[in-house]
Image (cartoon, rainbow, N blue to C red; front, top):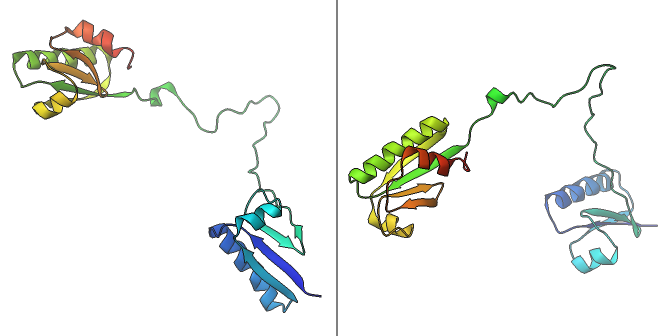
Length: 175
């Protein structure tokens, strides 16, 4: 009696691998079996297969082997297991802030940049400060009056020069 083996799946890498490892023993051991690959979704759904690939032998869907789970460490009495790696506070990095000063390079723009750097130093933040003088880019932010202060692509100030304390207040939600 000929055994019928079906490999149900969409033809992904896993399906191809299952097809290969199924056909090899059939060919090398001269088994009386036919192996067919089924990629038709209707046929797959008719067999009530919920995951693919699936192996069907004589109309019986073989259950999938559970994946091996990694061994979990057990604690010895009196010793608690901590996280898998230490996370000391001095290894945590402060968030990096991207600041853009929008303007033509006038005295107000220079003052705004100096105040922004002073606020960053007071807060101890790591930041990249970039001057943008291209009017097309400035207009793309919707700023009609310069100087402008953009923090992480969000316009915070336009048309005036805030002092360092005000900029620090604006940056505290970001920090």
